[in-house]
Length: 391
Image 1 (tube, rainbow, N blue to C red):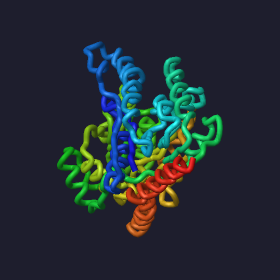
Image 2: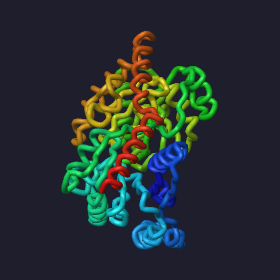
Image 3: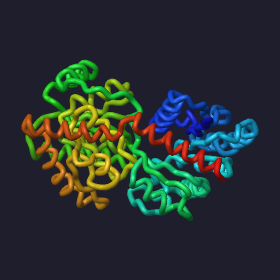
Image 4: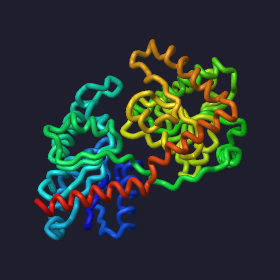
């Protein structure tokens, strides 16, 4: 097949979407397909302007300049080309190839629901609502979709005006190679890298500052657990540098000396963090998929996550499930205490029970094998092209 992947522009500094696009493109190249990646270049974006203007200059590159470039390239594309949108947020470009074979990968619709005022934790500005409307009008022109979870597919169908010709679910495959590492070795190596005493274990969270990642909730849980248990294990929050709100929350914690933010870690160090953790805490309010759940399990770490889709779907029967943090702040204290009891349960598992939990996680993580995901995706791509040939 001839495959053209539409991807997010590099100047947006996204991490997960470029990794997903790379997994798709590299996997299809390995299978012998002809692959091209199309994305906007930072022509206006690189013009020296105040930081507040950069977003708008980027919009010019994405929605004015790039569509013209695509129209010129389409004249040279063979009729047997499949156009692949690596994220439904690239919806504004879908009309450019709506009359050609195409497929849209969908990851989450959190921004779409937020724009409709359905997520109180994430209010959206007037411009943001119109931007999400533009995205929705675009992907609504799509005919074939691949969602990363059952929850994402269900959400997609709420937004489409009519049921599409094809709508499949393929769990994401790991976008990096994960190999188990001995727990004690992982702790020792990470301790040498960070200078933090980790030999007795630690609690871990991996994620950014997005509202749905619930980093503040992680600190609430940690505070409650420390007061409940008397165990003095540190908390590592791996990901982007903390926001001002999270920094202030840490400063108020009676255990602030044991709360550590680790930013800019290479993939190998993140894997060490998973492998050495006593427990991985992932109390997300929402997700499109929940990569860290699968990654932690694949590295042999017990996982505590939210008892809602898609988190509980990704965790399967191997996760320790907790309720979602309530939106009303005065109820958060009771929530944190309830979750702290679950944390204490996992931290104090007997060696035998802990090994059982780890083995269940390893078995569950096999569902997210990269080759298995790519095989299913390739089959769908072929099916779309066959359908186009018949039409």
